[in-house]
Image 1: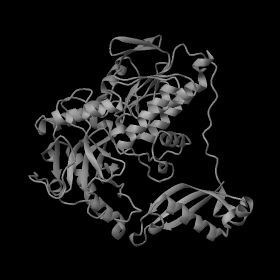
Image 2 (image 1 turned 60 degrees about the horizontal axis):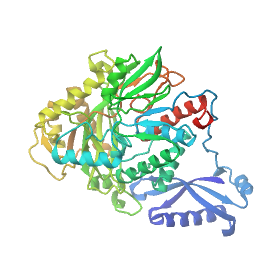
Image 3 (image 1 turned 90 degrees about the horizontal axis):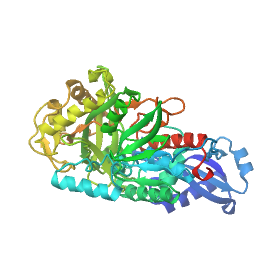
Length: 538
């Protein structure tokens, strides 16, 4: 195969996958003067929308082709055509040490899922302990909470099969460059995700499809000898002579193990506390807090695509914006959900947390994104390793108090926020958050350095994306779980200061998002594989 980069199609040439392939084939044949029968195959490897000039929006492609005169074509067009790089993931050889017990994985979010998947494929038969329910049961529990407003520790969409990312947009964008990303994408496609995530520049799955995909991955892990236990919260770590010997589940069951992959997620606060009490090395970490902002999706489409906004070759438009204040603070949009919903993501009774979610088609009338301001350990006013948790909790509980203690979310209209006025009625944008909302002033919820930075950022963003400061856009708060407030320190062997405990993923402070968390889980699985024999060899 050979790689051809930077091919361009106009929007009318790419209304569906079949037309894309047909028009790319025509373009390659014409440009490189290849005969029809010499072009043996063609595959899209990257697709992106170029909307820098709204009068000329087009689609850019990198493709792999197979031709009968490959060497001649590469030689003649050295600038345009190269050999396809070999990006195939290589399994590492198994180690020589014997495992005393099956490896245990705590948490079945992205890092835990892919650690379990890789270990099970290689014959290591991991035991997965997930504090929440399977994806069907957790959906039922969450919907029941939204109807009754009666919160339990099983109501949170942050815990359970698939982790917090299951109830999100399923975004797979990442800044990391790692061959393992391909393993993640291919595994998701094999489990039922659309094949387009292998090549689109901003892949996403959507909550509705992701639920089915996660179930299928679970079945593959079990088929390969893995064990997955739901409603299994690890409540203690058994340690002797600085070495893990086992874990306690639900304060009643002991599972012996010397190898524990710790993928607990960014909101497992009770587990953070247990780890701290066990003298596991935990450090404070910067993160961000802020709000969700909802606009009409049609406004975002118009701002990004102009008169082409309704073209069938273009989906719901997104955006990514950042601002640096003279105060030294930064603000940025995060986890933008085109055609999505603002959702309750509380993990504790008596606290309000918001997040964003989209379905696969991204066809809701509202767009939403987090608008976040960075905070640092200096803001926590404490050197305690878990001070960041208390910092988050303060705003979550205050939001609960300000809105009537019924899990309504605090909201304010954009224009009123900018002018520090109380909102009293909705405009064009109807909030998507359930179970309900209450008008407040965001200055009553957040510190001045947060609201001042958000106001500056909104004004700046309105110059970059026309309509961002729409007066009746809805601001919903608080979003406090953008990333973990801690880092569980690990050494070059990926272990904590307690041997046998391998912190991984977003909760441990080593990833941010589905893809990077999944890749981190694969790295830890590789470490176990490289050191130990698989179970069937012992």
